[in-house]
Image (tube, rainbow, N blue to C red):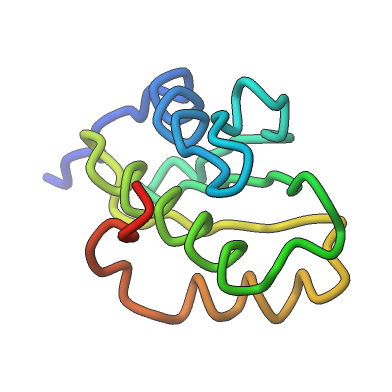
Length: 111
């Protein structure tokens, strides 16, 4: 008998992802209304899609924000993996790739 993975609370995912602050503005992704979409595949993987305050946001900040979103979401019950999809940035695909392919690590020093 195969057990189904625990159900993921998408509202908890939104809350965790939304609690990440922008390092320059010091307001959260939720406060800035930057979260676009949260979904799960039913197998423990979550996708968080969001945009940044500027399409020219400095890459180090964009990467730190993405890693912190992953770190917080992956701590939630039932979440096996979080993938971020950054939108509307001039190098969104590169940043998303770096965030999703690297270890999450510790929280950034600016938190």
